[in-house]
Length: 122
Image (tube, rainbow, N blue to C red; front, side, top):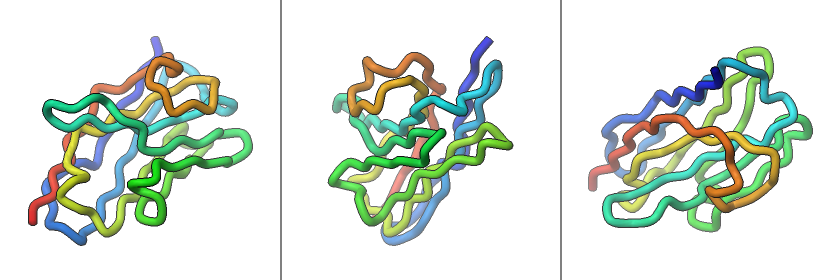
């Protein structure tokens, strides 16, 4: 059974940093595309970043480019999202996802974690 488990969320002040982790189990995702999405209350789930695990190729949403960094640790089967210079508008539930297409669309991902809350206060 494939599982993605996110951790690392919390409550921080604007300007602070957080690192989210997504631990995968049940299969290896060495050739997969791992993505991070987020969903704020009353809004649709939106793409944040993704990484092709085999090549390390990354892609970011414009809103987080330059502040967030996605990376992976193959040995640990874990994907990270380093979030710096956090803004109030980054407040959302953050989800980890796995798929095989380099897509910004949530529907292209086959596996999802349960989400972790990130709250940024002013």
